[in-house]
Image 1: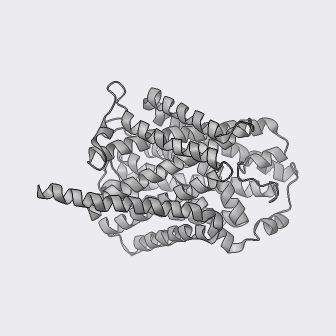
Image 2: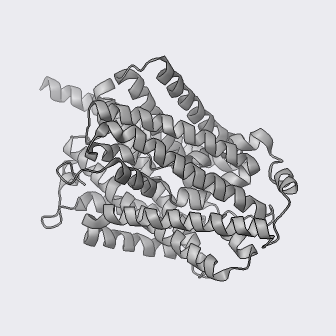
Image 3: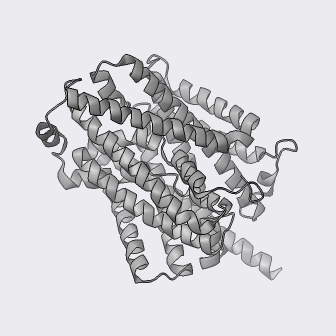
Length: 436
């Protein structure tokens, strides 16, 4: 949606945020958080929600003061210079490519629930082609579709909460006593909570996309209110659904490749609802994949227009005004996910999710640093900002506690180092251009 199109009310904007946020990061990523944190997953989701809110409020205040199409990338450039806009743009692009790979893997795993003999790499390949096809044919309707799927995703989680709540009250589905369930799932203590903090943050990934859309609000000053209401609603859905799901499953029943919302419905012997929810998970994941593919392609195009990427990436198709070259570059990036799915199908989701979540948190950290530089907030806002930065840092280093998270950490660090090296080279190019 461009600036010249119809402006959004704060309610429409909040709904858009729900569509961007609720996705495979919650539907499957929460499974990793549960495994590492047990019942401590509930407080860490609350902690992640507050930190996410502080990040969003920082971005919303910068938007309200000066709406910019480039959002945090433009603000970083204003605060620290061209190198900052260049580097954060490419770091964010890298995080989105990893997150798309994570989404692609997740919907492949959901599809294997119905067709377990089909290899994951084949599902990844098919969904990649379908996503590219949908973007090329229907880019104008992506925002409307995102709002529709937001309603579908919310309805699916509410349905689960109602059904699972009834199961707890009626004793349907072999509900485990609360004390026994808490004792079994919380043996990892606060160390387990620390390990799972990143994946709680990952469930809120997409909040930064609202920054790109905030300039399309009728009143940009309403952006903070929309974000607060959206995050409150999403957090309530997350905590209630996960809390209920934990009552229906033991550690033996847990599986990293299955949504925690599926297991309780299976325990209650409700196959129709299981298949219905699994279908919603696939559709919801695919909708996020399509929207992300279009959005990150558009961002790659704007990087090109600003001179921070090759000029040929800025070219659009004449009829549909699509960033076609950028779209195919990003599609080539998805091919990496297909190869990884062929190489390590059992552990790919956690590794890609870890790396993508970490690189995204690096972007969020820079948003907060930019906010402190540009806005120079009062003491209360500074406290919230530094608290958010501390929690983000805790999530980053929490993955090092366990061996399974270290591969993703080193990948994320390698991405940042590569971007910084390219930025140093580009600084020399820009300096020569200025002297010429």
